[in-house]
Amino acid sequence: MNSKFILPGFALMVLIQLFVPLKMIFDKENILKNGVLYKFKAAPVDPNDPFIGKYVALNFEAVNYRYRQDMTWNMDDLAYVTLTADSLGFAQIHDVYQKPPADEPYITATVQYTQPYENQLVIHYPFDRYYVEESQAPEIEKRYREAFQDSSKVAYALVAVKNGKAVLKELVIE
Amino acid sequence: MIKDLPELIKAGVIPEETAERIREYYRHKKPASSNRLFIVFGILGALLIGSGIILILAHNWDNFSGTVKTILAFIPLVVGQFLCGNSLFNPRLKENVTWRESSATFLFFAVGACIAIISQVYNISGSMSGYLLTWMLLCLPLAYILPSSIASLLYIIGITAYGVNTDYWTPNATPHYLYWLLLLLIAPSFFRHLQQKPGSNFTTFHHWFLPLSAMIMLGSLQADEQWKFTAVAYAVFFGVLYLLGKMDYFEKNKLSFNSYHIFGFLGIIGMCMVGGYHDFWSIETSKPFSGDSPMLIALVVLFLTAAYLLFRLRAFEWSRLDAMDFGCIIYGIAAIVSISSPVFSAVLINLYLLVVGVQLVSQGAHRVNLARLNIGLLIIAALVTMRFFDIDISFALRGLIFVMMGTGFFMANYWMLKNKKQDE
Image 1: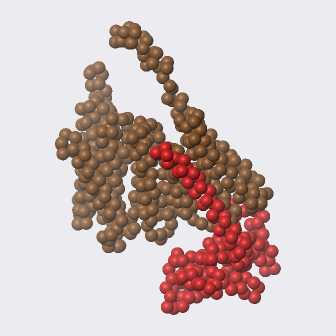
Image 2: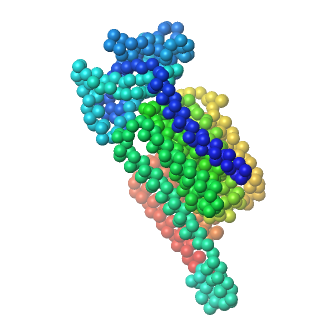
Image 3: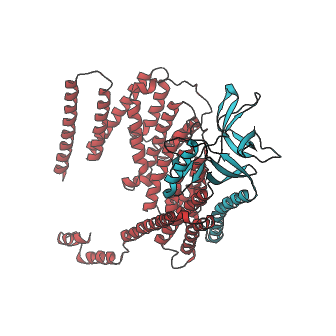
């Protein structure tokens, strides 16, 4: 490389390498601080192993949506999901749009699969894993399973939402 | 060589003063092998230090707050950038290859670790493809600015992993062609290696990594069931590699340097071994031919490249041709003919393999080259063995034919060695 470009090139490379992870952090912190908080009630996962590596694979109850007959949805389509809260304060799907809605908070998700004969689709949320430290994994796994077997317990994810983006704040098992 | 000098002086091959000048030269020559060893150990050391730091942090990870985790994620990155800056601008380290390659390796993995740790701290799901793409693009400048050969090689590995993850492992995905653009981005680094360090080990590694990466990703261009195009594309791809390996630049160097020749040869033989079965050509596809298939475009590009290389080799001097040069053409003809007669295609491929085997045996015998002779015999033997599974003959007859083949091997090698000894 021409020597007069080395210093500016190196400086630019350093700045970009620092900028990208910092931007990731800034975006997520912005959502956590200024986003709307929703509680997503967790649904049971594969009973054999909810853990893949060092994270809990999450599944949620609020994933089904019956769409209008004039709409067409395909697997892996982007879906813009608006939410409402049920009587217990857990998030439910209010509406699913094919373009971002202008006037209400929404999450950018994807269509996991569709059931065209029933005009139903299943949503896949972008917050489907919760990272845990390996030594704590067995205890959390036990409590996570117990939450589905014991009706007095509940597991849910606290998610902050802003401008279509979502950040998983915490996994609560109580 | 030093050890042979007394024998050469005694035999009158070189005078005493020439021998002394040779001893003097080697006494002052910089030991290249010990430099290479330092570079290798330097790179290994950087990898181990980086891995060790990550493991120590991982052990205590859960005790740290989110802010501390974030800061810790950046420390290897900043340290790696400092080390690379040092190797670039410190006059004492500027020409130090070990320092440059080690710091580039450390920074390469520090970038990946930083993004991964941030993703974990903020529970960002993301996709493996997105992660790999970001990581590789952030580290691509290392191959040009430092410039680091290891970063260039790691980049090739990384984009191959990205391509495999995006195009092979994602079910029902539409083909992405970004991998080919990413491969083009490293091309100037590769050409710089060819021009400035043609004989170096790093350049040799590039000669191996690049065709291997392209070979892995070529199949991803198949968007539907047109697998015959894929088969022909691979045959032409290997033909192109074989012709590249015949260019003067590669033929002058040792075989381990000439990955194109090895890949091309093994690839064409492998494709022909598979194409020798008529079942291979008779399987029907359920989807009709699509004129805008990306594999068809790749096929056209590869054919034009093969034609250009043949022209460059001035292969119209027939003496420079051998049967292997025609592998891709034969395969293409077989694919076209298979539409009406799959059996004829299989026979054509088998005849072609027989010609290749016989030619290699003949060349081996003429040039007194045992390797060439034995490879030719192996090809003929493999061809005969594979046809055994196609035809219904008794075990006794099969055993007899195997005995004859084995005897043929021994006799050919014995005769060659005997002639070689007589010539000496």
